[in-house]
Length: 113
Image (cartoon, rainbow, N blue to C red; front, top):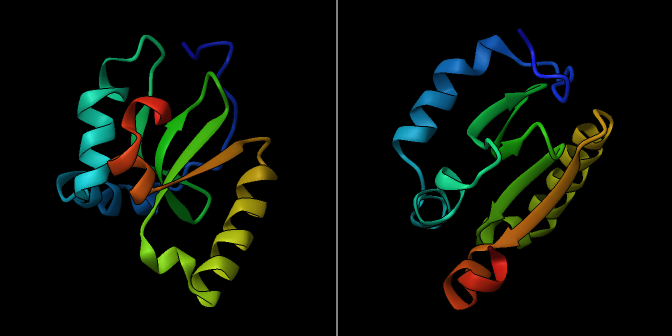
């Protein structure tokens, strides 16, 4: 039975294997946020979750929230344009997208949490 807070996000089954591989090979920053905070958070979080034709870093269906951790490649012109399009698509599913820089994870982890 589905939770009453679940809603349709165009879960893309074609990306399941890619998501598994990304979970096995998380970045240092993703591991830190997952193992030191989100994994034991009282509300369920998913890591490397397929939504539409993307795999988001972290997703909470109850909060309708996507967390994206951004490394240096996200701060190029191409990266910013790609992220803007990606965010618009995710927001079309009534999701809020929060972007957190890897530098913020390193410098101010408690505030990020």
